[in-house]
Image (tube, rainbow over all chains, first blue to last red; front, side, top):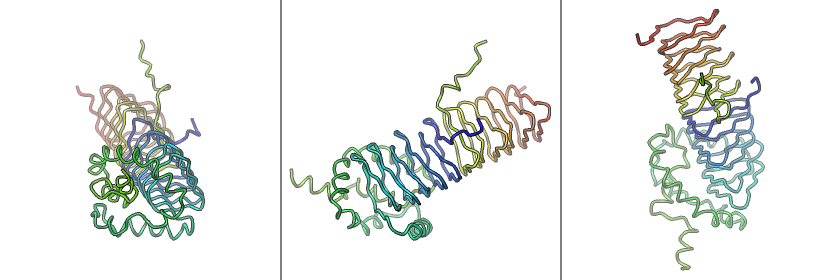
Length: 200
Length: 113
């Protein structure tokens, strides 16, 4: 009993902030913010809509929010992640869906950027903000990343649309990455999607 | 008397001893707290506040078992149990309430009589 692992169960939802100095496994749902000095595991079927600041991150479920991981990030095949990511080591399995910016450089700078952005940009920042910064150019450059994104993208977008309306009203502080999802879904299709349509 | 709940086999939620949750925990499954929770707790199953845990929240559950410290109003649909060494400040509402010897309590008790 003494060394029980922290788990947010399948049928449980936490909205708010989780801080701590131990490993956390999310099987259910978390909205808000997660800050740990240890590892965070987002299990398959779990939904996390939060800015994440941890040491190690392993995602098999869905994660929307900006990520800072001081050691490593691992996205498994079933992972669907939207948000900017900063970590010195990033692993993506084939089949993982990810959209956002990857920074494997200065973690502290990225952490500061996330913090300032969260303050500066209100939760309900408009689509205009999203249009100002479309898919970052870095995303297009490495072919590896493009393949992963294209392959998994159709699966990825559909469920996100369905869940979104409820989440919008419920989320106390929608992560900054969030409006960009809405933008991509409602009308403004991402670059890869347009290309696909033209080919047909 | 088949009163044993299937809590052991179910997927539980556990808040570990070094974890602080600031906000709301809602769910349909048993919840065990060893750390700190501030805000609101509502579950359709049992809530266990272990020794060493601190809860500053309104708590709602089927059964609520307290061994740690709790500040807030508690509503238990079945039973509220204050174990020895537990500390509670707030109003307690439950059809059955157990105060163990050594438990500390300040607040109103409502057993719906």
